[in-house]
Length: 143
Image 1: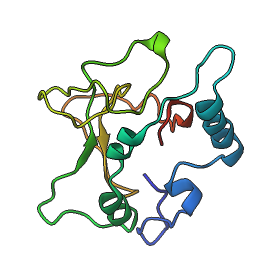
Image 2 (image 1 turned 60 degrees about the horizontal axis):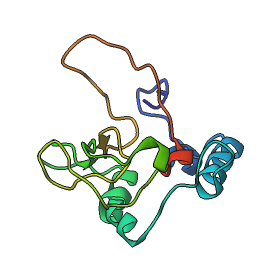
Image 3 (image 1 turned 180 degrees about the vertical axis):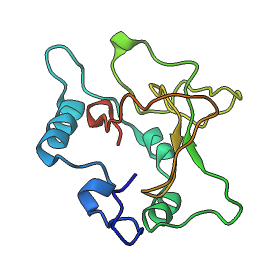
């Protein structure tokens, strides 16, 4: 959640924070690792099917702070139940995909659920818990 000002309104954040690019040197190293790999990690696999993971209309409206009028939250990717083997490297292709519904709202190596919400959205859960990690994982092909 964005820090609040004394007036109670959310503080404005910059473009680098919005897109998870801060700290920029760290994100640049992760992106380089995704593209080139190293001695222990093969390069991330991209292809034409990778374009299917992008949702430009949704991402731009979300970045501008738009919310759905019905209060529902868009999900852009679900956990892939048929992931490629770890030893094959990270893949953002859509070649063997099946989400929990038996559909294809995922990509080869996706292991989470992506919600498209504006910065500052309050996150709640049905049970007590703590957020233990927030990451960009550019080195795994994603934001």
